[in-house]
Image: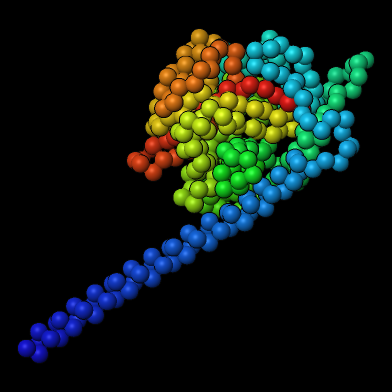
Length: 322
């Protein structure tokens, strides 16, 4: 009997130790996760607030307070150099059409402004403030190329995707690093390294971001599965060469290797077939007619349903403002 009691006591002691260890490990993991989320919330919350103040402030130093359209989908407009010297192309002069299958080498696409006898370009205060804000981020990290802003509901920060847009030398670094270069579980929103940093020069601008359980980063892309957001919410990207506005035409679940993230095409017909295929796979249908001259963005994030599951959102460029 004594031996049985000792054995029983040993078993209970072992179980208590195991459960205690499991509890402590779980508690530590939860605390670490909470701290990681809090770090990201503090870092990006501060940047978001600074961005909102920047684009909303009015000083009267610019000739116009609201951004003016310099390119509109379906309309030919005169090319206009941005403050950094980049020229915004219209459909008839767009370079880098992707006819060649070899990816471009990349690099800075800015050019020196051409001498002109006409009036100096006039920029809106909103655009100039956005440029000033982006340059302030570039002083922290020159991999910052812009800022992505998706507002599902006005004046509701909890329903906003609002982050610096990065581009690294590969697609690995910003999977684990924040915009300031620090290691961060939430990481960054970043443009595929093979794309041109001037979005007007890409047929497809491919952008990645994590799907965080706390609702941050690209988690809210799932909102586009709801008709009211799919139809009415634009994707806006601020860069040094313009304010790009995109209209969503497709949202769908896919796999990492299903071709949804293709950015190079052998011909215009191949490209048109691709964007129409992405549209046909959408959970919701839009009335947008797509053309081979269109420029699109693909936003990509992970899903937790199975390994290599992805959520893809495709949107067509409808205007560039400055």
